[in-house]
Length: 93
Length: 299
Image (cartoon, rainbow over all chains, first blue to last red; front, side):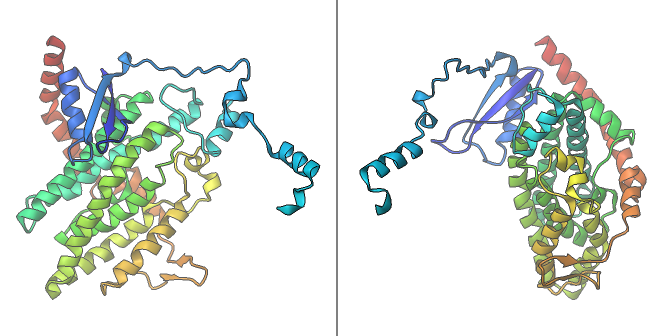
């Protein structure tokens, strides 16, 4: 059974994926995780979960091209240039 | 995605995860490279293991035991990555003990004195960490992630080795002689360590961005970082041509690449003996795996 291991390096930091391990059951998985990812005090905490229990979502479709709620939806450079020229302030900068 | 698009993706810094599509050629290269790394971690403890019972102090014995434990731990992490790519750990171990798989050149040589233990932990681990840091950006992300932990542990292994060497250099003439002999003995294997100087663009492992630097670049980095550290202790490197040019590039005597080829294809001075020990211990511990697995299934 494959378990995924996530580790928190220090208190206050997020858990990050560290690796995976193959264990016959949860008891062994815990022992292996302690050995492989916590033996030298390199982790403040570990999460282990069977790989089969994880649900991954990786399809974020944007059919409507809704860039208005993203920074890249607002390319201001050209418009600003035009506005400055209109106001006669283009050379001030 | 076509193979060509994938190649372009990884060459521009893209990474893939375990479930992502990848070209078969890439997957097979990954298995070959990562399995060799795992084998090296596992075989690499054998030369050091021989010195646990002969360590000069209790502190050194504990440190060496812990280092051996760390390296075996690295093998566990690495074989797991290989398993996810499609090759079970037992199969990797079968191939290893049957002599069908490769492991790093340095682990085919004997350790003759405690001086070798210091020089291995210092300089072999230094050479290894240079290769391993070039894997932190590996195009196969699960491998890159475990490399963080591995590099962190290697960093104090180097200190352990340097501490052993410095202690001996500050000791008696006889101790200094042991270190000098070890440096002389290990120099050729160290120069072989990063492989022959093929151009990165002809190296499939670089091409697919499994590693992020070429062989010669790694060797230059090693020479630049460690030759001055060797020289400042009054130790000699057995290569009269070794010097840093005005262009910052180190010149050296071309090592015998045929020796490297011989050694890594299983004809090193200690290859057969160490594989035999690995075979023996695997048989000796087979009952543990049987009991653990059957109990776990029953529970």
